[in-house]
Amino acid sequence: MRPLNYAILKYFTTVKEACADDVIEALKGEYGAFKSLRKPAVIEAIMTGEANGLLEEARYDLDSKGELRVYYHAHKEGADTINAYIK
Image 1: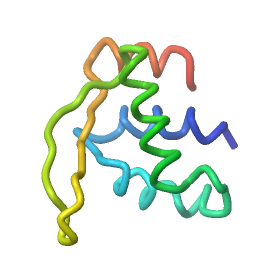
Image 2 (image 1 turned 90 degrees about the horizontal axis):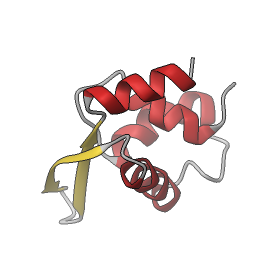
Image 3 (image 1 turned 60 degrees about the vertical axis):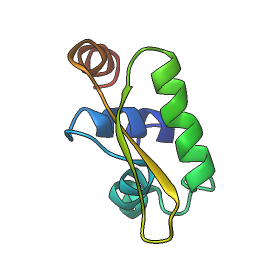
């Protein structure tokens, strides 16, 4: 099992775009017991990926509760870098 932050980045290479809720839903089967698989920690991991140039913001909307959801995607160079370092 790879570290959770690696799994989060790797997930973005398999989808067109995703928000923190999508990441949590996709990874909860394998990482559901991890304390870091909570929304604030997942958002922090995604934003770290963005700050490092691996991910970029794609769009945003509001969920059914009126909470902001920001969607990110791994652009080609970011996905290539992620895939080169995380097998």
